[in-house]
Structure formats: C-alpha cells, structure tokens
Length: 172
Image (cartoon, rainbow, N blue to C red; front, side, top):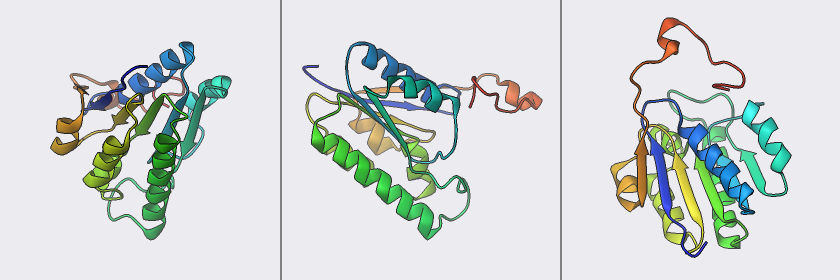
C-alpha cells in the first residue's frame, strides 16, 4: 500500500468485529500481513480457529482477562490493557504489518483501561503505509475526528432482544 488510513467501526449494532476480521481476510488474500490485538476478549472464539488457517499472514493476540466488562477495572485488567498497547506499539513501529487492528479499543477506552490519548498516540505513530483499524462501541469524538473513515453500526432490530444467546459461528 502506498498510503494506509485510519478506520473506525463503532456503534451499538452487530458487525464491528466481523467487519474488521473480514478486512483482515481481504488483506491476507492480497498478501498483506495483519496484526490483531484484542483488548477485551479471552477464550476460544470461532474467529480464532478460522484465522489460524492464515497464521503465516495474520497474527492475533488476546489481552483481555476474560472477567472484566463492567464496574471498576482491577490492577490485572489495567496491566493486560498496558500489555496490549505495548504489543500494538511494537507492531506499528516494526513496520512488519500492513494492517493493525485494535479490536474493542473503544470499549477499553470507555471502561477506563486505556485513555483516549493512548489511541491517539497509536494513530500518530502509525507508519504512512500501515492501515490502522479501531473497533468498539462508544468511540470518542477525538478518535473519530482523527480517523479517515468512520462507520457506525446501528442496531435496528436484534434477535438478542427475544432471548437468543450468542451462537457459535455467528456471534462467537
């Protein structure tokens, strides 16, 4: 790529992670190297199994503790988020990756395990030719202003409201 942009996928609707991971597959199909850092997730999600088939081009790491989604973060949650930021910084500065995805960074920001300035710093240090993707509900106005592309997923109707839990291969 001659120029990489900053993309944000946000909103209360389904599809933010799906869009980012779809982009990673498209990038791998073009021979690009992709790094995905998951701030909040821990565990065996279906996308991990699928992306493992492309481990020569797509690297994915989880940094979430698997316990924190509401309330006050623990020291362990804060340390995990710090390790995630360090890994993203290293991926960006290495210039080894064509695409870097900060999955659920907006949620991590909203929950207070990272700061808005942490995300803005990643945007500032992004190499010219690297695409940076930031996902999560509730992305800050400052991050949206710094991005080149912002897509909002808007929930109109969701079967979750009828009691349908997350399904393997579809939501998890």
